[in-house]
Length: 493
Ligand code: ADP
Ligand code: GLC
Image 1: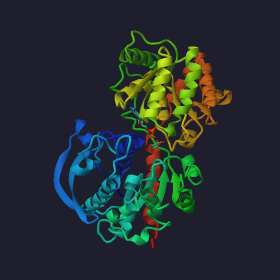
Image 2 (image 1 turned 90 degrees about the horizontal axis):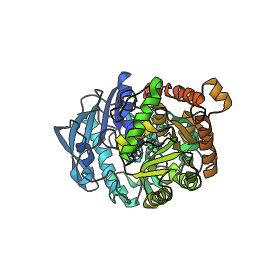
Image 3 (image 1 turned 180 degrees about the vertical axis):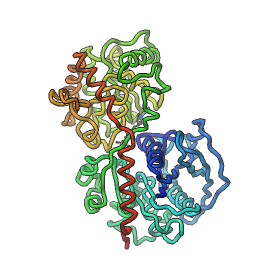
Image 4 (image 1 turned 60 degrees about the vertical axis):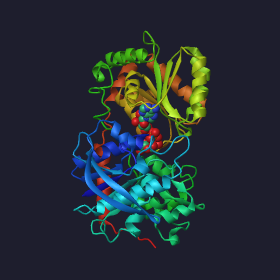
């Protein structure tokens, strides 16, 4: 089974969120199951700053873009810890920029950049010496790949048998562009219709992927159900419901080589379930030093690591902090970047309670590891969450997640009740309503259990013993790939 993995970010090369974690780990897991996987991703400026070995293959070719042609230079590396080849598509005009997608505003030419990337990925696969079986396309940035395969590259020998699988990591980011960008794609205008590429007058990259792919997946079974209705489908619920038979949810795993408190190089003392208390204490000493404090705070540490955007329920956190931070029952640490208003609102509430709240604005991978190691409780109060990875990292590091019952959080956290605690199945605290009082109540329940040392340490050990490695989910992808390969491709008009 030959799989071409097309993703706009992949750890450790470039990362803005969980997609990078998935694209950095799933190819290796598939390869361990015997798949022949190649990853294709853009050569952003960022990828050269990571100390990864990147070579020039010497291969370059021209990619049509509207009336122009842009040169794609092909660089090569390997996914660390695996033998998965990584091809990086280089073009300075497109990718040699300070950030991946833009700053507060997206780059104005993102349509052009990812049309180029998608076509370059296919042109590269078409020039290899072995045929591709599965094009595994991720998010809107690779959304045009299934359509290019069917409409433009279907006769290329290395691509003629390929089936495409479109994986949705987030319905809220759809890659919607000006209709005139159709001219850059090279697709016939006849496809600019409401059943194919058009979405309320715009060109929809993700929609195109959903229509043209042979199968669709998303990153948890619950999210797969949620997106077939409003508001989860973000306007594409009709398209998804119509393709319900082709849609499935496979929960994300985690890279257990990167996220492992036993071997983590970013924490001061590695630990496992038996010495979690010592490991966490050392991490808290290091965290205090990092935050400019002489000694760690003895109170329970409640943390949040994530993008500070509407999706993540930060408004609930700000409201909750305004009420509970003054009570002195816990200390809060927040690491993230997001909209200027959210960052400012968090800074303001932190300034009111300097002894209880620490807000660190920035994207800092190493610091995230230290926080998961130091924390007792990790908050994921999302408005919606396709899968979510921080609750899984928290669990692996013996921090108990407090999550809202949505999307993948439902599939990965079992609420601690008297019964589930007794049965040994509890793995966090879950609340339903998108409401800061519901969040506060769940934190209260967690702090209540935390005050019973025996009960808490049993819960922590239990949670750390769970297996969130990619093995099971990679097998589910492989089964899907096998089925898709055997089935007839989805016909397009
Ligand atoms: P999403 O992809 O929606 O952002 P996930 O929970 O799937 O959410 O993945 C987020 C990933 O990004 C995790 O690896 C998390 O640790 C990381 N992350 C998010 N914000 C930061 C930050 N400010 N610093 C370091 N890592 C971060
Ligand atoms: C998205 C989602 C997140 C998911 C990640 C990886 O960014 O917001 O829930 O875990 O993709 O699939």
